[in-house]
Image (cartoon, rainbow, N blue to C red):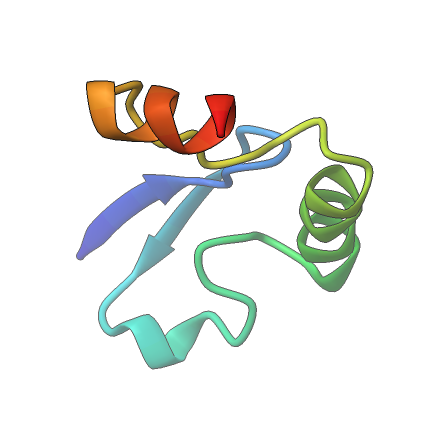
Length: 60
């Protein structure tokens, strides 16, 4: 049996297969939607590394 913590609330989840948890890697639909809301509100984002090329692109 494997375990993982919910990425939203931290609740520990036990599972044999990922299919055991329909909302994987979250414990519930609520936590899943809270995470999605964080992305929509831009509280979470994927930032690209700053390179000379990206700096030049933004200065043009």
